[in-house]
Length: 193
Image (cartoon, rainbow, N blue to C red; front, side):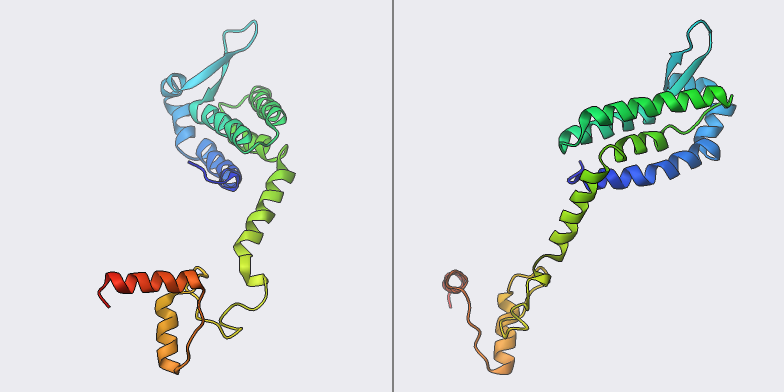
């Protein structure tokens, strides 16, 4: 499961490269050209009006269509515009395959753009929010260590073990919040100290 829409955006940025390689030089090309019966089984056919031929869309293309549309709904992006862009990208890809008379074109680059373009400003805002969260308290002024407080653990919460080691090593006593000291006393009583 994706915990953030930024993961979906990252997939949308990477998957066009992978799909393009697969269609032009990789396993998809081999299947479409050498073993078309396999592609026929694992694809959806869209017949041309008045002809016996059809354009086929692979299962991964439909999977990513659903993923991008579900992500737009899940994170309250522009679902209608996303659906329209995804659908248009499938249509344009099929049209280009017919016009250029090629066995197959990668559909995922168009699907990725169909997700990213209608939601670009919302995705950018989410990225900026995430970046600010990652900076967190580092920009809020000097931390407890710089201000003469106890050393911080890697996650920014005062570490009792680090504080006691520093205090005993330097002979200083650190002040701690009442709830922190109460929980330390309770732990000491449980250990029989």
